[in-house]
Amino acid sequence: MQVIADSLPASVAEQLEAWLRWQRVARVAQREARLRAARDAGLELTSS
Image (cartoon, rainbow, N blue to C red; front, side, top):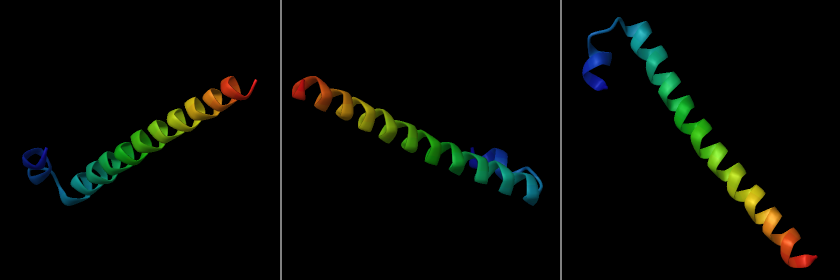
């Protein structure tokens, strides 16, 4: 990915980097939300 970024204009490379960083953040947030939902569902199953 770095090779591609090096061949692009700085602004495009910066936008690409920011987008990739956002994608990583979003993936982590989705995983945490799924884990939290699964844990909540598990608590509901065990408590009822």
